[in-house]
Image 1 (spheres, rainbow, N blue to C red):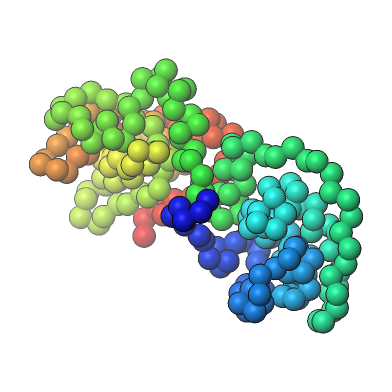
Image 2 (image 1 turned 30 degrees about the vertical axis):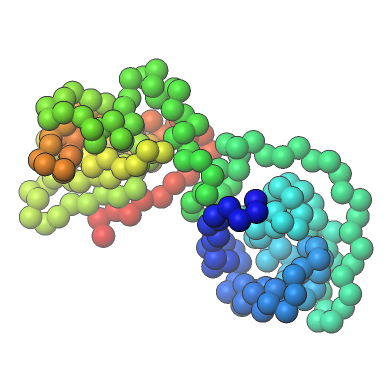
Length: 238
């Protein structure tokens, strides 16, 4: 990639990787670069769980290629690994098919709770467009009073004590975020969709006050099934 900008995630983001293992990896890496997965496992004293967590999170790409190849490499590392022992010889590497973009995104969310690849809704945009759903950038540019529908991943639900039963929902897609206002009459009628959807479609109208834009929900639809095996979380009522 040359001098192209890059965004790197910390090892602490990897589910299942012990903090002590991350510290040992960082310390060993400061001494010199890792030659391969076996070298890293030996010098950082990693066990099978640590190696599997790294492979699942796609953290071994530079040493072993894509997730499937990386997992195969970890199988060739002996356990337990004694401090100071030489790295074991790795078995012949088969040519494994790389995961699809969608599979990688699913695994990113499963093991990191986020992805640095394309937003999941970018892969669904053609389907959502056929359903006449606008994206967040179009919602934020819409005129006051415009009738709209918008679909996004639910990232936050809030119910302020002073809001008289109103729930504020934030949804996101590959273009940004949209703010949804769900009045109590809609929320009470569609409580299941409001509280349970990971992918939420909102039918409503735009309310614009200067630069502040909301969609006032008239109807909600749970479209989580479109996500397949992807599971996303939200911050609710904090």
